Image 1 (tube, helix red, strand yellow):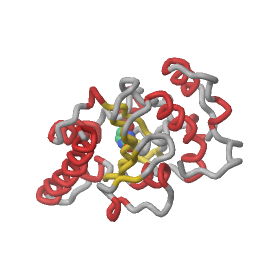
Image 2 (image 1 turned 120 degrees about the horizontal axis):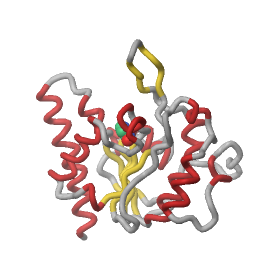
Image 3 (image 1 turned 90 degrees about the vertical axis):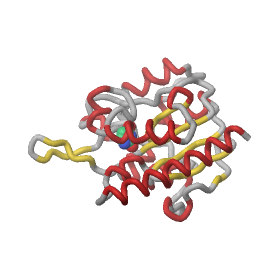
Length: 214
Ligand code: URA
């Protein structure tokens, strides 16, 4: 993971239970104050999915819907993800789904809560939760969706547009790969652009399905 040794101060590392279970890890994360985002978010949105899931999907941070409901990828981006997984022959039921940052970062704009990108300090503070989740789930492949997750997981040198679909050795799992964030598909300017972006996302996921079958 893209973290230097000796960087555990001001991170969630001290909050990780010894020999955690999914329940004890989730409960500890619910009390996390390792960075200031806990003040803004409604709740910690922890990862979900079966232990032993071969596929481990990592997004950026919960969005507005996820923050209110307390579950990852249950809003518009989650619907794109579900559709693409299905088209690629994968099922959300068999995947563990989480985010690299577990609180929603936003600023008010009228009645809206506008998403803000998490900064390096917030990502670093949250990484121990992700490491603990990976250690519990023991997946075969980590999939970082979007630049924030890709660079947090694999380092600043990763570029999603250049490196999508490639497989990398990872620290806590046999392989890691990167693809776009499903919300980037929602931001397409035209129907044609959206269609092409969705097709490419499905192709990346289909390559992962093939890897998992192999
Ligand atoms: N975007 C993310 O990165 N994660 C979510 O859980 C929802 C939207």
